Image (cartoon, rainbow, N blue to C red; front, top):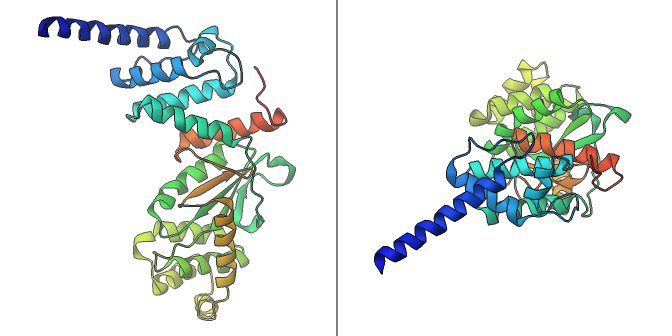
Length: 289
């Protein structure tokens, strides 16, 4: 009985593997053969269980096999592959993609944008505005910094704007935020922004003043502004605006007012900007290719 049970289990495992291979085979323009076998199995399950993200009555696998799946569906497939390669289970991947997909039609937030804290496309050229709520002592925000810079370089129609969200757990979040806004008023926001993140592990009032001096600011004037609490109300207002929009961690990213529910990476940022451009051009709907 034990040998028979083992044999049956092997047959079931082989059938699952073969089914997975079929689900991932012959997908025009997509090759997932280099994924580890466990990741391929999870991805195959996603492709077999999920339906086309642009509304066709086809499974994701069937839609991709036809070779004419919409760009959004193909991006979702690539994101799913990325999650699978990280070791996520198919159910987790499906839930993550579902939340992301529905976020496009959900109610969006409106933010008061300060162009002095934005970089990238300007005016009508800015088809996509990315607002990042962040804290200068947050390590995840520091990790996102080069991604935001790369996003501006790689996507001509994108404007990236910084919104302060000082966390109470970080003792230098308020002083650093004040320094950034002081620098903004002097036309040096991004220079101070970069200096603060680059020196994140050694921030204190003295260091912040020294950084201000290095980027060409009046350190004494900054000290007086900080002592007077000049920017504290503005920092609090920015934080409240973030809370009202659903910020629950830093960094939190909003794309044309839509909260990015995916983990922040260059792949997810690039995909969501391209998705947003397609969504806007389709007047709030996914267009077929």
